[in-house]
Image 1 (cartoon, rainbow, N blue to C red):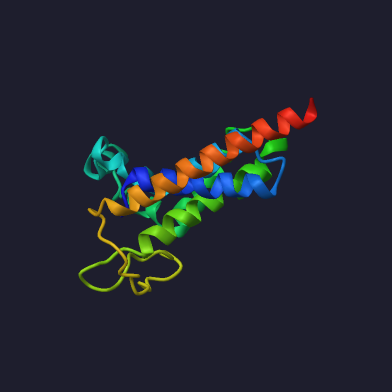
Image 2 (cartoon, one colour):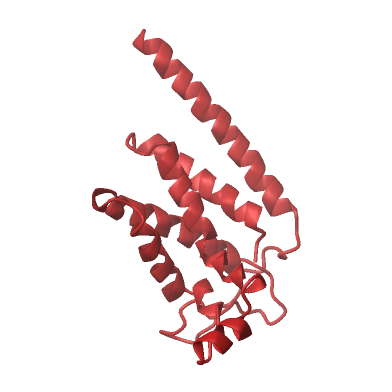
Length: 169
């Protein structure tokens, strides 16, 4: 997987880019895109609450792995949206889904030993698409590129906000 920082930065880049196009999209909306970009990595809860522990307490086989699939991230997106007031849920689901999509795209672009990615569409299909082979999960350059673009967008957004504020005076 691309590291967590890269996922967050790409979510920020996409969210801010959308805010240039859609005036209603503000900072809190960009945060939803960033949260969606992290959602598939909620599977890392396994580091704190191992599968075996949950299986032992539930008395049934259990795995956190499905959280990193398309169906798992759809469920996480819908659960997160339940934390919001009903009038905000539709936009929140769309913004979270955009973030989730960036995460899966980045993960599919990884270079893998088998040349295949993970079963993104499980349980609908066990098909493993070919990996993009663009970078290793240990590479630092994706975070540097995403960080540079994020800084440029942050400065651009601040500049445009200042220009619009001065034009209103």
